[in-house]
Image 1: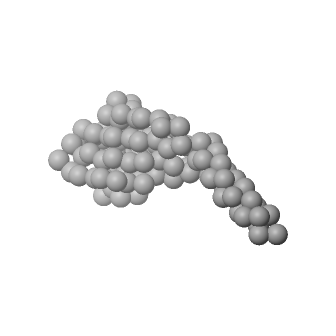
Image 2: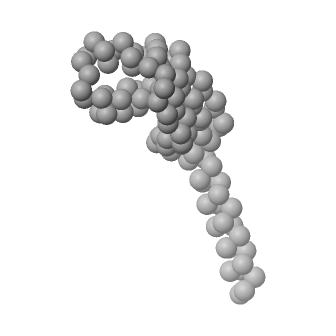
Length: 105
């Protein structure tokens, strides 16, 4: 009986690990999702700037051009440098983005 429980526990452990990595793989956000997230986050935090300034600073082309993306299968790492010299490093995993480092100028 103890052997059955131990075997079941090992199978469950590896099952959970396999499920977690599979879920991470299929929910790894794309660069397009990242750019949308940057624009949304910037617009929420930059309510004091006009639409023209916002488009100039945070246009999709500028974000794509200033971003270096690295796909690591289960997550993606992004480094972005914007015109206003703002820099940030972000990890995307499970369709979420986590800011690791952010600095201005």
